[in-house]
Image (cartoon, rainbow, N blue to C red):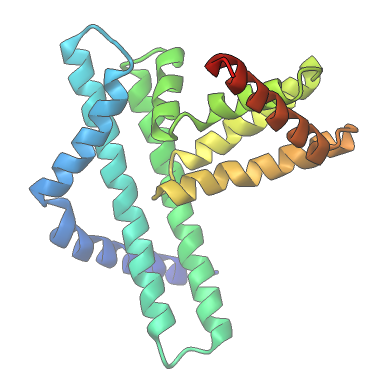
Length: 224
């Protein structure tokens, strides 16, 4: 791709960004919603420092808004391409792929800058809590699930599962919706399951046995 074409594509995204920004991102209600989402995450950190809580909340809320700006601009341009009657299906797909790649690049830069900002306020453990907060705690829940379903996992297998889910979480943090966030974890759980199958696990059987154990636990708790 030539430099001129790349620059032109980025300009299209910028114009879309400006158009959407004027319509939505100055809306007090939208700012309120993102602030509330961020507050719920930061409250669980129990920082015990009001000034730091405010600073971190502002960083997280701004990240939500910045992600939406890029994703909404991308989606607006993709819609224009899809609605175009002058482009062939092949050219439409090529244009859409290019728009997605450019947005992904912008999101990648934003991701790094965001973590750098958090790093000035929080230690690694607290940053991890923020990441889990942004992704509904799917990582620890899933790790616990695998460990409970497969109690004989080796340390190497546990590490593979954890590392794969950490990578999934990095992507899921930037997801524009709950569906997109969960889709990232679903993709990596597929990789984990393929790995475990190669390691000799019959996951259909293991899953069925695990659900039986869960049912038995619930019965024991209820005294039935």
